[in-house]
Image (cartoon, rainbow, N blue to C red; front, side, top):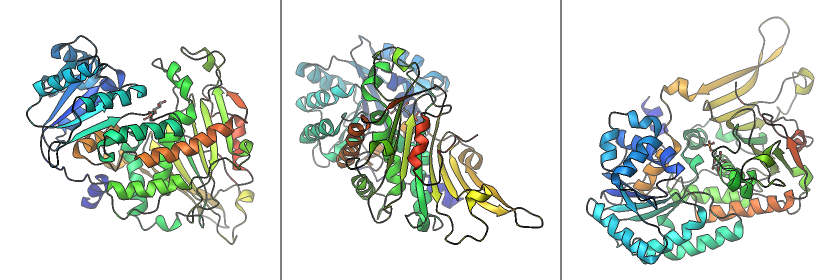
Length: 495
Ligand code: BG6
């Protein structure tokens, strides 16, 4: 039991450099992310006693609110969290600073406002829950007002940026360059909320704490790997306008899906510290083959769901993909020649994210070929959401005379095993920022490598048809062709 409890806490946060209180300053405090994710996560961390020291939340936005009005807004925005007996206690410490964040004067006023509500010397986390074109102006403004200055051994100043971080390699590189002129890489936390999901972190534990699986994790035994990030939703909450400028490749593949791929495929890091983990992840991203010399029709399938062009905010002639699948390779010793089939889309029949590892057939056939018997190769499926868990598919002898082989499954379910809901991804990530642990955040070279690959995919995909697919379907039928001559079919959502 003790060992299992330990596993769930990995990777362990590095110790705080100091134990000053932390002021978490949220830019975009009146926005959707703040009410739906950030504040409930901070509240949950507060009730769970997960912050190493005192934490103060300060909302920053343009609305002409005072502290009370902001607290009232949060009480409505956070839903059921507001019914918790300790909500009042949490809320009473929440502060609000109104500012336009446009001129240097606004930032100087912000500095005065933050000092006025600060509980004394404190570390500061600036969470930029704002549109991505405001990341750089906000950091410039903070810098000009002296709000990012750190003295050695003094209070820490950290900045968290949401996605999208750039919209191609050129813009991401330029944003990195500009931000890193002001901030150290150790001050910059690029969020990918998938890294805060328990099952994504469990990829490390599953691979590197079990002698059972890791020896099989290579081209000698693995025939192919599939990763799906399927979504049942479409353009809810007025997202059409933003999504139409992004598309599935930029919205999910470049970030969430490649991060899962990197954790799945990386070499064992020498420790769980941020540098060692991120060094190994970036090697995988660097080894991802681009599409330059590949026939796009054999490697990319894209689709758009029926009715997408009539969604609010979407161009009626839009060519944006709401579904994409790619067949790619990691050109290194471990994975050489193994196809990685990646798929994501909106309006699929179910929300499910999973990684399926399909193993090669045994080298010598004693029991008849699997295609004759109707039985398949062994598979391990890591279910990331919903119903987090792991399935192992293998084959057994049916009891009785003769030799009849039947499929069997071992399945592990987080909820059944641990009887407790997993914390929200944002809670874990916010705690890590406060603790100064960057292991679950994306480093500048990771961002750039993932854009390199995504740009190459996006350039080549224009040479492929944009298939229409029905809502509530698994996407274009052409996606089956990505298996080429190999055995395989796309994974199905768990029942
Ligand atoms: C976001 C995308 O990053 O992730 C959304 O912009 C998507 O389009 C969301 O719906 C999916 O997150 P989750 O945690 O619901 O799988």
